[in-house]
Image (cartoon, rainbow, N blue to C red):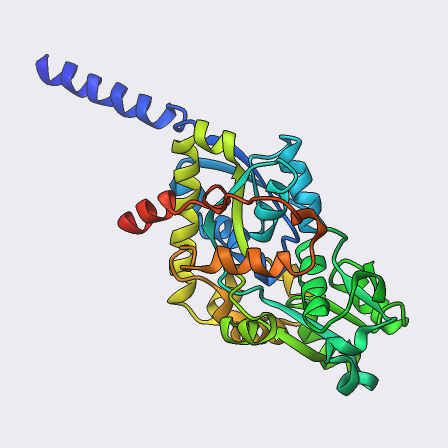
Length: 336
């Protein structure tokens, strides 16, 4: 009889365990300023590898056409995080809005200035952009900031050229093919596609820390995850879990080949050309951080670059300590 009851209790316990609902996952919404761009690849890759679920997170990724739109969504409390460029944290603080980078994906912009193939020798020098239409993903985006910084370094003023929002991918390529722009800043996989079909050539390469320093005069850490500072401070446990997932993703990327990374991504991200996608990953791999940390002295460098052209920063004091934190990343690295 005792054996019967013991067996019955064990069976009931097993059935209860099998039918019990899974532990509730914490929902969080993150907007990406171009989810199929390789500069923001860690966002989708973390989901593909299951690292969010591992942390007990139910992450919903949203796509936007540019970083400026994504930042707007964050300020409107439509999302809890944005995968975009670190420079937005400085620009928005100048407007009284406090957002904070919690993990750094990239230590270089990963962007490329493409120039019209027929006039490449001339247009690769920003000093020759005077009177020209230059393509950016969106006005107020990081490509806007970087284009203006390069022009200012070459001695041009804002009224000397026109910025045209053309997005990325097919819309960027069409704008250059149709002559709407003669130069434009974009990222992979658009870069490889434009060069292969002969539409454009590489004018300025910002895919490595070294080439970025040569072009801008200093470091320019770019892709990151930033959050509204007040929300971050009120939800530190959730923020830590998100950072844990991203740091694990960056470490995974550092130990896997471009082919292995590409194999994890949705096939429609290849734009029909897997070989070009892999090529872009190989050439752009130096941009990615291996641990999610903010490089020493880099925030000061970004502020200096933005100060070279931005009227938003004139007369403003920026508290760089509030534009980023390494607290979450340090803890994530200790456990990953």
